[in-house]
Length: 141
Image (tube, rainbow, N blue to C red; front, side, top):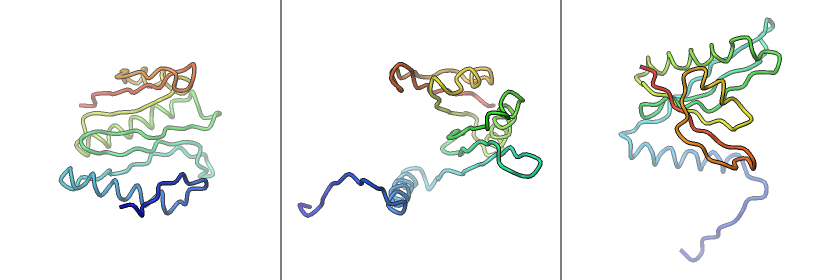
């Protein structure tokens, strides 16, 4: 083991990053009867088919985990974010996941998630400095 070398990669290789994800996913599957994240993507597109927003998440171990929700600035405030959440939540329930989990920063979408029925589970202060990182959950069914 003395020939191992630990280094900080100045310019991470995408293949190395993918190898880490693959390794952890395989380990997790070995501990969870082979369960792996089942990804879902809901999108908002303009009349020409251009992506103007969407939600990326996964159902895993009985939970919908929401990883990204983003809308281009002009598309905000028109109900698209709510529609994205509703689509993802319905699909999660269809897949047998009765709970949802999301993280957001204080400058992002905390009021939006609360308006959609999510409750703060934890708050990590000073992440970012002067702000907070929130974990929210929702019972779907």
